[in-house]
Length: 90
Image 1 (spheres, helix red, strand yellow):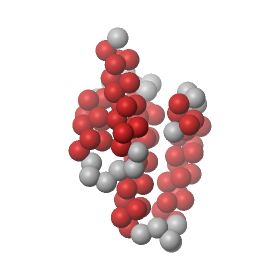
Image 2 (cartoon, helix red, strand yellow):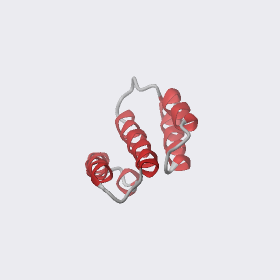
Image 3 (tube, rainbow, N blue to C red):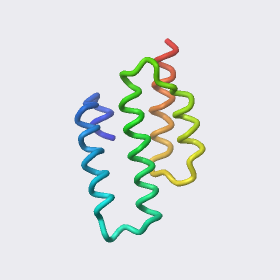
Image 4 (cartoon, one colour):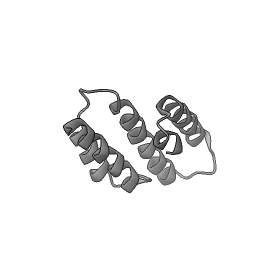
C-alpha cells in the first residue's frame, strides 16, 4: 500500500507478488485468513494494473471490491478504485 501511495507501481506489484507467495506458503494461517488476504492481493494487483490501462473497467472493479464478503483493506481499496474512476472521468 505504501509503495502504491508513493507512485512506485512496479515495486508495489513486486511486493504484492512476494506477499502472495508468503500467504500461500504460510502454514500458520488458516484458510479463512488466507482467503481474506488473497482477495486483497487480487484486488490490489487489479488496481495497480488499472492505473495504466485506459480500458480498465473501474466501475466493475469497485463493485467487485464492495461485493466481496471477505477482503482485507476494503475501505482503502475502494478509495483507490474511486480515485482512478475520478481520474479517468477528468
